[in-house]
Image (tube, rainbow, N blue to C red):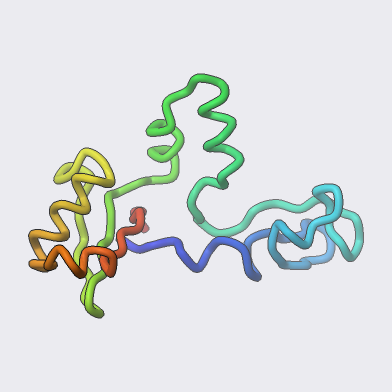
Amino acid sequence: MKTEAGKRGGPGGMKCVDCDWQGSCDELEDEKCPQCGGEVKQVGKGTPPVESLVDAILEGEDVRDVLEAGKFAGWIAFYNNKKFEIKKSEANDLYGAKLLAITHFKVPKSKQGLLAIEPAYDE
C-alpha cells in the first residue's frame, strides 16, 4: 500500500494532451491548458478529486463506491516517525482505523493529536 499525499496539486496533477504541459488544477484556464488552450487530462493514480466526492454525495450515491473505484486498500497511520498499515478488512471506517492505530502505537491520550491517518491505495 502507499499513500497518495504527493499526488494532489503540484506538478504532475494535470497534463496537456497537445503540448505536454504539466501542472496543477489551480493553473488551468477554463479547464484548458494555460499555454496552448488544448485539452488537459489528469495523470497519476491520485485519490478521487473532491469534486467527484461532492458530486457523488449530491447525487445520492454512496461515497464508498467512489473510493473503491480508486483501489482503496485501507489506511496508513503515522506516529512518532513510525508507520502502521491497516487493511480495510481490519477497520470499517476512519474512526476504527484510528482506534487500531492508538492501540498499536500505545499513544497516550495527551498525544493522540499527533497521530495522522491517511487513505492507502493498492499499487
